[in-house]
Image 1: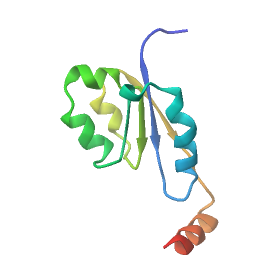
Image 2: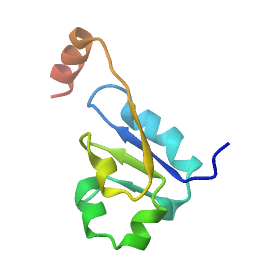
Image 3: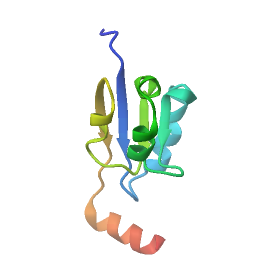
Length: 96
């Protein structure tokens, strides 16, 4: 097993149980090692961090785009949950 630090990036697509997944993921990582989309996008938060703070990030969770890994100094893995588009759109419509 590699000792190199990796970051998990969960791209939350609306109406795909992302909030439930984040509830499971967050306790697995130290609070200081995770960022989310509360208050600003993860991309904005990472850009505003110094290099040392960015190096500690192990979990990025929230509404963000592919490419966030370019703001990290180490390897990253993406996690995206997809849902059949028909029921997803119907669920989004009902939510709105």
